[in-house]
Amino acid sequence: MGESSLDFVARVWIVDPVDGVVNVRSALLLAIWDALTAADIEIPYPQRDLHVREPLVVRLERSGRTWEPGAPQPAEGGPPGNR
Image (cartoon, rainbow, N blue to C red):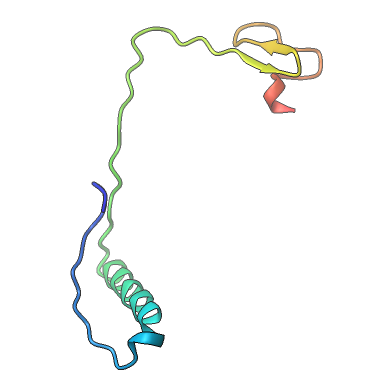
């Protein structure tokens, strides 16, 4: 799986594997989720910090009009992407 996953191995036996595998798998995953929730166990997602060393200049273009942060806004009321 991924670095923010909990990987379980569950071995189960079901009577009708042809018609029941998807349903049983779903029910099993939901039961695990419910048990973790009931026990107040949360799974945190990893966080990343991004440090920008140099100023970042952004230029937006749309329909031949351009706008850059810090420049006066176009007469139509804002950056081209906000209309």
